[in-house]
Image 1 (tube, rainbow, N blue to C red):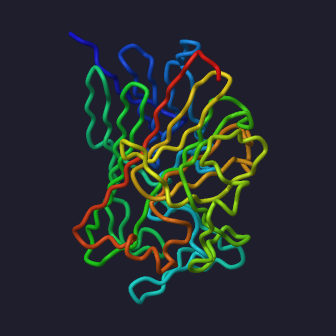
Image 2 (cartoon, rainbow, N blue to C red; image 1 turned 90 degrees about the horizontal axis):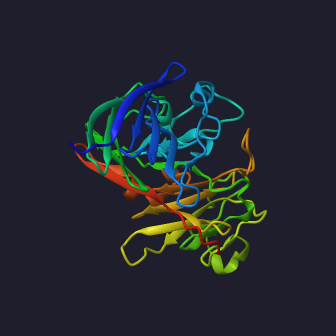
Image 3 (cartoon, rainbow, N blue to C red; image 1 turned 180 degrees about the horizontal axis):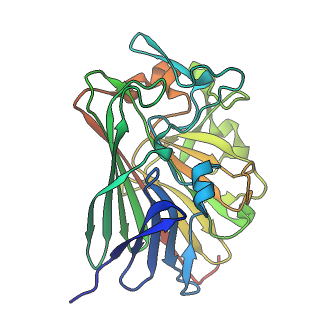
Length: 339
């Protein structure tokens, strides 16, 4: 009998996890059921032959519960920030932080702290698929979000690639504003300064000091006018500081939009892919630990503060009984030939 991928139950402290391993042990991933969060993704290095950690996830239960850095968090029902934690939708005002005064910062939704359950798993000699589900998003469960959403997250591991499909279904009787994204941190070597980055984007989202996009067309600027943040041609990160959203992403010949992170010293590279949306990039300069040890390359459906932007309204609307999926992933390639 041909050996297949294995899925086993484990724990991170008191938090339940799932461990996925390839038959030859050259692929290993760990997922926490809290937030359907990827904790680790390791692939056999073509350079050293040993398992290489490609993500910079939560190391222990304390970090997972604290959510500092939102490491590999699934961002739903909104990615990034909602200005002043307030928005108006379908004629109704909503407050995501009722009773809070002063600092009203809210970001990356609440699904990243929601309990998921394993709904289905399938393994073959070449891949593993895990379908995680939550029905926790219901009216009254989360302040300022009176909508009913069923959410499934499907992880597929096959060889050197990890794919994620996030699917939301509106099970309520009113149209809901909804968007999602992913907040993974990737690492090929530490610090990230010597890595090369390529982003196939033509536009940068302009923001104020609070990282909220400027109104209307003022919120977009051509990267021709921001050469400091232009990575259309691959270039070394160096000391550049990035916490910005890239728009007008160009797909490659296969239809995938690919952002490429390369280690010139080894030739290894990561290709973060998506089919639509935007890409947020964060160089980790304000992380509580291991600053600039990894870089967040975040596929997102919408810009920051989408709940308050008329240009995003149509893309947010999830009608009763309808479903919408956002699919993305990452592939690893290694080469012993340094560039």
